[in-house]
Length: 317
Ligand code: XMP
Image (cartoon, rainbow, N blue to C red; front, side, top):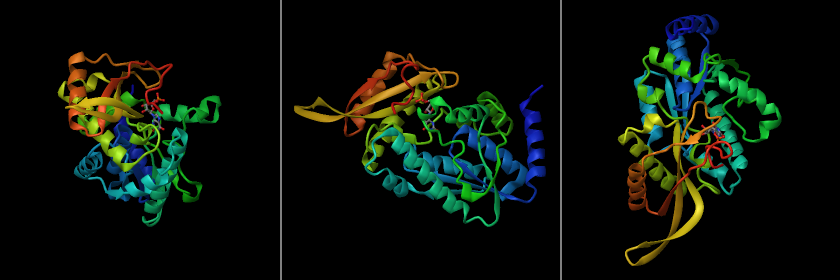
């Protein structure tokens, strides 16, 4: 039967046969799938795998530096690319969710294409596609397609003419984690919550500015840090904060304030298709709410989202 050990052994052997001395380029996201896929390819072909990690300016606080360091520690041939201003420029003036997703997808392809062209004679594009992505991308052409455009799959521009290698495309998430463990990848990476490709851009309702990103990064960092501190991180399938395009009245000392509202969202789920709001302890919510309001300038109110999916979605955009 299927074991992670035999999968690793066979996949590495197959990759070696398939790729020979060819070069492969891969974009890494810091997520479980792309990290496990890259590690397998790296074990097969070493430094012929060229990894690219793009800072789109929409990641969690300090995430770019931390993840880049762990990739370096893992021995991957990785290049970090600071493209924050490219992404911010492309988002300028956009507030509609799908328009933001499209702009981010396009910027990503621009940057990736530019970087891939710097690698001489690269023949393959590696991707961390897993089985459920394969299924989901089929429905992109179906009636539900317009609900949300995913750019994890099929985001390859035709003119790049790269062959595709996707070592995880028969696996489910739990199998990917098991493979990651067999490969010795850090639990901190394997246990990470899912994070959307468009990042904080779809958690800032309306227009994106670097200032709003900075506020949301602080809020998110307090929330996620709190989940870790209270040992609740693993009980939750995904968590994050939304910066609402709403100002509310507050009071500080004897001054009235008029500042932003943030919504905290934490859900339990098996696959993200359906989800329940996480019944987090009131004491935890109280501490996190206090911390956010006291520490993050520009936020004077915190609410907790108690909607299930369906009919709500996990993200607010
Ligand atoms: P929803 O909001 O549809 O989210 O309940 C389900 C899961 O998908 C993630 N998500 C995205 N991931 N690009 C992505 O890579 C996107 O545009 C996108 N939109 C939502 C969401 O974070 C959740 O895990």
